[in-house]
Structure formats: C-alpha cells, structure tokens
Length: 259
Length: 303
Image 1 (cartoon, helix red, strand yellow):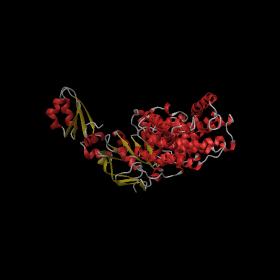
Image 2 (image 1 turned 90 degrees about the horizontal axis):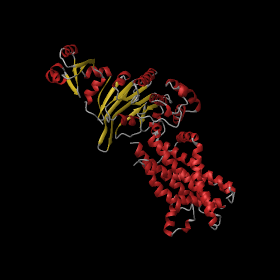
Image 3 (image 1 turned 135 degrees about the vertical axis):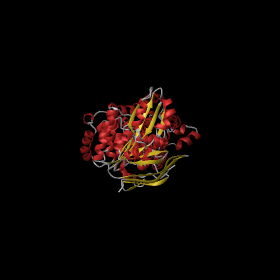
Image 4 (image 1 turned 45 degrees about the vertical axis):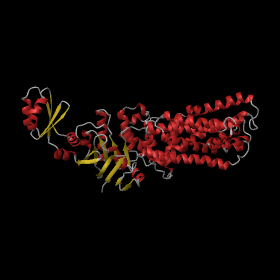
C-alpha cells in the first residue's frame, strides 16, 4: 500500500463547496435529522431519568448528559457523513471519479471530504450547545464557547475514522459492523450517560483509549465551568485519531481507486 | 510536436498484463481513435495518460508535461468524458458546470461567461435549471461533454462517448465533436462503434490484449488490410454454397452464425453467380473499418 504522506493544497476547497451546495439544498431535513435524535435522548433521559437520580458528578443529570450529548451528536454526524454520504459519492454516484479527472488529486479530494464532514458535524455539536444555552445548563457562558473549536476537532477525529471505513467498504451493509463494533460501544462506554469511573477497571482501561472519552473529557468540564484537566493531551489524542485515520484512509483509497 | 506521446507502456494486475508495450502518438488538432474489444486495455490506457494509474513501465508526455509527475498541470488542460455518466444528481445542469469549473480553479467571473456558452454548445440552454435525473440519456451525455469543456481544454479524452445513445443523440454528439476538431482541439477517443471512428478519427489504433495491432488512417487500414468488397450471404442454401463454391469464389470466407462473409476483389462476378443460385439472400457492400477490426481481433465474444 502507498502510505506516502498526504500532500496538502488549497485545491480541497472546491470539494468542500460542492458538498456545501448539496447540503444547502437539503439543509432543513438534514439539521432536523441530525438534531432530533440526540436531543430526544438528552431531554428524555435527562428529565425522565434525571428526576430519579441524585446529582451526577456534582451536577443535575440533565447537565451531565448535555455535555456528553454534544460529543455524541458530533460523532454521529461526522460518522454518517463520511460513511453513507461519502460512500454514495465514491461508489454509487462516482462523484469522486469525476473529480479525479480534474486537476484535483486524491489527497485534495479526501481532504475536502474530511474537512467538510468535520464542518457539518460541528453544526450538530453547536446545535446541542444552543440547547444548553437555551436551558441555561452551563456554568460559565464564555468558557462554553471553547466547545465550538473542540467540536470541529471531534468532527475531524471521527471523520478521519469514518473515511477509513468508507475506503474498506464493499457496500452500505458493511457499515453496520462499524456501528455495532465501534460507535455503539463508544456511546455506552465513554461517559455519555454516566461517569466512566462507574465501570469495572478493565472496561475503564478500554474506555480510556477511545476517542469519544477524550472528547467528553474536554467538553464536560467546559460545560461545568472549569478548564479541562490535561486538555492539551485530550486534544492531541483526538487530532491523532483524525490525522491517523485520514492518512490510513488515503492509503486505502489510493489502493481502491488509483489502480 | 506531439500533444501526447506514450512509449512502451506496460501495466499488469497480478498475473494479467492489461497493457503490453504500447506506443501512442497524437499530433495537435487530430482525432485518434482507440479501438479494441472489451478488455483490450483502452480504459486503463486512458487512466495512465491522465496520471491516475502509474504504469509498470514506459513513459508518458502529455501537452509537453511528464505524466504522472506533472499530471495535475497536464489535467488543467485536459477535458474528460468518462464511459459512465458521473454527473452530480443533486444538482441542476448549471450547477454541474459551476461545480466542475471550480475544480479547475475557475472564478465566478470566468464561469459566468463560460457556462452560457457551453449550455448553448450543448443545446441545454432551456434546461439550465433542470435537475440531472430529469434529463434524457442524450442530454446527460451532452452535459458531460459540456462539462469536459469547462476549462477550455487543448486535449479531450472521450471514453466511449456515445455508448447507449439512440442514433439521433449520437449524431448530435458527433456534430459537436466535429466542431471541436474544427476549433483545433485534439481528441483521443475510445469506441466500439467503427462508424464513429471512421467518421471522426484521422487515425485509429486497434488494440487487442493490451497491444497495438494496427494503426493508420481508417481508409488506409481498409485499403491495406482487407479486400475492398464484402458480400454477406445467408439463406437456406448458404451453407451448401459456402461448402462447394465458397473457397474458390472468395479470397476470404468467414462465418458468423448463419451468415457468411465473403471478402473479395471481384464483387461483380461473385454477385452474378450468387444471383443465379436459388435459396440465397445476399448483400454487397464496400468493406469498412468493422471488417478490418473483426479480421484483426477475431469474431469470438469477449466478455
């Protein structure tokens, strides 16, 4: 496989603009679809289950859950975009093939897809942030503004990983494996719904290497009003997942398309 | 100076050699047709020339640029019509051209003048705001051709541009391509339609199993490689006739299903004798590129 380092150029921008133009046409259903699911979880569980619970990590359960939901929603959006929409463009509509006949090379194309999916997922994270502001769940409004760039970083991490799956996938059905074996376990093990300290030690160890844990370790303190401990480390891990995923996806897609 | 020149191209996938020592040369303003049965290596060759596939051996220069090293710079001046339509289904006709133009780094001002001209060229002005799924097959192909022209390319690669089109739509595409040749564009075309190659191409190269087995102007190939006249013979008595007279009456006799193809220099004499035989139906016609192609690549199916 060709693991040559990605060559960066600004030619990725037209790919981003192409996807943005499509998104604009379908913006309303897309926003609703992205927002409705995580928001229902958050409000349903936050109010319903929250009533039965004492404070979790020192705050009402809804507040605790809201911070996790920002990350979960961002992850979901980045994953769906790179898996299903990305696969459509690569395999079904052959949009990527059309683009590769222009001056863009595969590095530009995947860079455009990567940054686009992160941008779209940023919107999903920010939508939950708006709900947090609306319900006044945050401790320090100014501090929560940091969630905006962090959501983009979370988007990059999960878009990078998603592009790897897309590069490997023979069909849409393949993505079920990724959801069952990676996304769903992360949703349940990484501290969206409860502190990871509740888990048995082995599961805590597993959880500590998963990207969603690192995302939540940054976002939750920001919602609760303090600077996240070791934030630079968590950000670095997210960046490593994103960049590593992107690089691997590039090598895999070269093998798939440029043969 | 050649617009395109390839020397000794080889490409292997596992044990299969798809392209085997191919040389190609294309002078400016001409149309070169790549003919060959399925699996002859045509599309792989185009991908190598575009810098999308690295050949195992050989060198490519396109528009004076080494490919794949300077493939990006070369592709800035190339237009491509792919075999399968890959227009953006979410977009209108105009948005397809706009988006594609951006890939070439064209700004809003340049696109504002080019898009109307291309819509006019493709006869799609009234369809500018129609979404792609609502277009007919012919319109989609015309849009794909217009899209390939968005960067005003010097060189066009057309991979089976009229496959799947009805005769009317095909003739419209041919007219468009002739206009482009008249403007001085250089065209590399792959096709299964010999008629297409004969009409459009100054030269054709016949590929089979990754090798070039003939090259020349269509008329030269017909004159040089094959007898000038063919008589196609069928009917109840065809088989008997072929068995008794075929070998003597024809310089070359080929069978495809129930039809016998009798290649000869003496069409008139043959036709007289056929007319006198009951139970035969026949058609005399000048040999064409398809006859050359079938002679060179054989009549058995390639899947």
